[in-house]
Figure 1 (cartoon, rainbow, N blue to C red):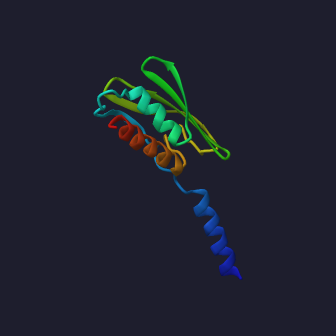
Figure 2: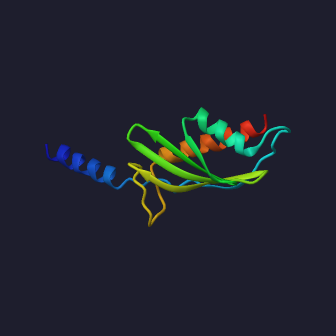
Figure 3: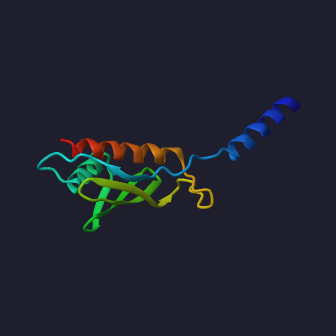
Length: 124
């Protein structure tokens, strides 16, 4: 019984101390944009396909919002004619640690998928 209790306490401690990965950010990702396509349009297409809500804040800057169940993420997507970045802005229920700049592992997956899709749509 004592061993089970120690094991349970150890598991709780390990779960409480688990570390989250660093915030994944895309910095000046160069992309070849197909003739007749714009990077702005590719960003909106990629966002729509991944259920991101995109709003153009000003020319060259799009703000993206993603809401999955109780999790919310906001990113800035500055872009030029041939490059873009994806920058963390804020989140809810993603265990973001500003001191260590770490966040829930799903964040990387969501941003990475958006990055891949933006590149794919730009090249169509």
